[in-house]
Image (cartoon, rainbow over all chains, first blue to last red; front, side):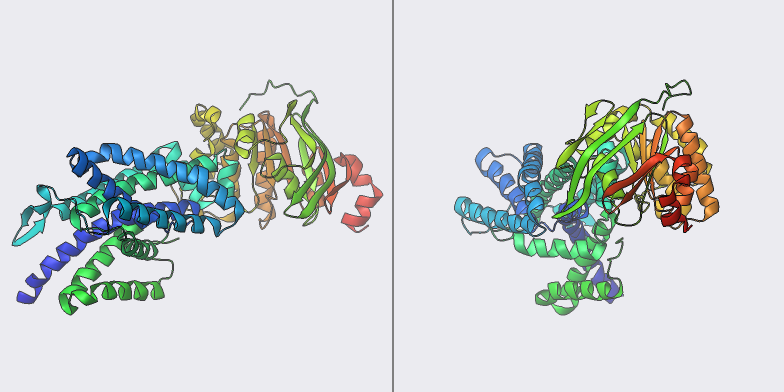
Length: 288
Length: 246
């Protein structure tokens, strides 16, 4: 009895953390699913979202979630530009060129963060960032619940977008068969730009959620890229549902691993679980 | 799609003039010229690597000629992007039955009407496709990858029709399909032609092609080697020797 009730906290926390991981990974999953590009700058672009919210908070006193009104369209436009002007040209050069460009963007961003905000860790500290809410005997930090709910909402909206709008259908089609989608009259280059833009807008949201949950530094993008990559690969490339479940699995593996083996082992446990699942099912849980 | 009162006079719909096309560093088409007349069913016949698929891809804008030109309804389309070409009314049903596997039959058909002009015609075109291929209506909620080979071929033809084309290109639709299924498909092509859509199909099977088309071009290693009405071609000595083993 005591054993089980002791587990309820890491289980709930693991699921909530999974929501954050899913949100962070979603943009990576989308870009990979549509353009088959592993955007190694993705973690840094999420942190860009965190720093943008931090800047509006410290300079203008705007609440981080409210700052998304500007932050999401901004990152949408940046993503559109990156794909349309940089990546589309890079794809014509070689398969590796976009990876190298992404790597370059990553380095540039990390240095920009360091120049403007120093290597000291920052956080989006708001009044509600410290609040808890009660779930039975448990006290869950409010931001964790926020992450989980937002992850569900974003997943749902994205899925409906892909199913009900022509643009969403086109993105879905282009991710399944590039050549056939060209023959449908789809302008693949424009579609890729929109997909990247949407991925970046979600990254802006993920950045705010991350910043509300954890402190971040100029190099925080890297560990979160690794987690996002684990989530995407585990869930199955190109699957929204898979990204969500993958996030849950890694979040749970981390919190339960930490519960049983201590905090130093938690990421190790998470990645061992990923390895085990991929050995049994290489295409990921919901992969094609 | 237009009704039966379409001008079926033999005017030129597509004119390919003397095109050279390169695939990477390698020349795939040499001075290829073909003409497609409005309302006809034209066959493009040849073995593997004869260049017939390359020609189709060039018409569709996936590749561009380095020499020569392509005119559709009088307009030069040689340098257009594939999505512009679909807008003009040319629709290709690619080889290999390239369905969107993780979409339903209906979703596959809907994305076929992506181009702006076709969107307003979506429901009418869907009705026509369901009339041509009733099995697609029955299976419209199923995932496309669960369909049989013949059903998938019907799906990609239906999807090609959803873009409201005046000119339909079909690349090797008979590969891997049983004769009885093929009979159905060729019957559908005739029905499609009745609706005023000009058809060009690419095939390896000479005998069947000459039965189903009005005119044909025969290609070998990137060049057009023979052309004419199918009745004339059937009688030609070279055709008899090379393809019918006479």
